[in-house]
Length: 467
Image (cartoon, rainbow, N blue to C red; front, side, top):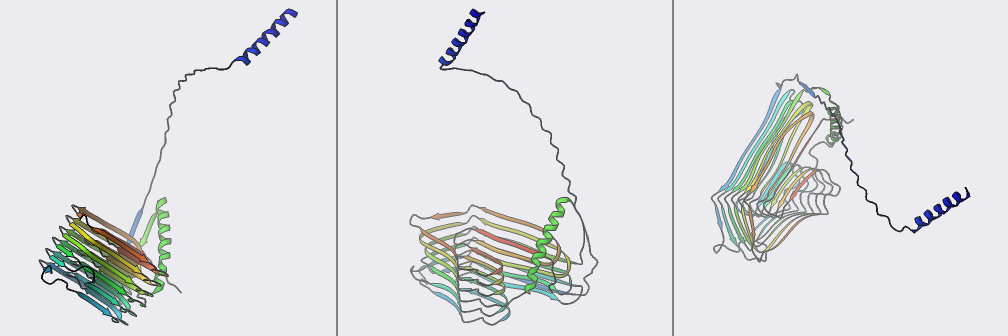
């Protein structure tokens, strides 16, 4: 036993010594693993929406209707000053004018060539009970197959549109167009269908603006559109208490969306009907524009301050631009069903722009629109072949809105060519403006070319009584 014990002890000692002496171990392991995962998931979504609409009023107490139709065109006209009447200057000035007016104020100013400008206001109003109000406005503006060929001495301003210290202390609706450019289409449309007890209120507007197969060539021209110290201190157009209805609209939308999420059954009763309809077709087709050593400026400075109301403005110091501002307003005092339809097509195809020399473009809004309230729609274009539009649709007294819109834009085949000596500088500036303002402001600025810019805003809400 003693010998066996010694042998076991010796063996353990040798094993321990061997373990300490090992310096490296290589281990190769191969693992094959197969795993199958099966997930079964079933999702059921059921959404049921039932809308019942009923009405028991007939529009037989009276009616008010307004209709406006405008057709303006320049076709196969020529303006040539290349070697014949060069160094011509044109300055349009409105100074210390158009002040302290009440109602509707419209101003058009154009030192340029072949411009179509217009302002239309359609108002259908009746105080009769259970009445019908309809306002329609249709505008068509066309520039086709025209030629502008102007050569000037670059370095001084040859053409200006200036409104200074004017259009102040007015109240109502104001529309302004300015253009020192060429072959521009500018229009402002306001369409209202309202009444104190109307059953049906319908406002419709149609707008067509086209520039087709025109040729514009300018060398050495310097042009400026300016509004300075003007369009200020206006009074309100609508009662301020109506704007508080936006809170009711937001609350109603939240409740409506929440109800739809869980599948609800709506039983709505309407005692009146509103319709807002707008069809617009705007295009620039197969135009040619050439410029060398030119300067274009559109400027709003120290203006549109302390205003309350509805204001539309178009400024175009460039050429072949389409600009429009459209406001459609309907109002019924009851609980109405409102239908809003918008069809819109923009087309810009096969236009050619060629630039050489020094080219300067700037649109500036500075120290303006402070402490203003209401609706402001502005287009500025020192560029060329731009399409700018602002649309505002306002429906008040509606309990439910049905909207249908078709928006389309087509572009293709447009070419912009810059010569080797082309020096281009463009500026769109909005500076120190809109401080303390409230309401809706829709602004388009474009010192570029061949742009399609449109802003669409529709607001609908039910009234509330503020005591």
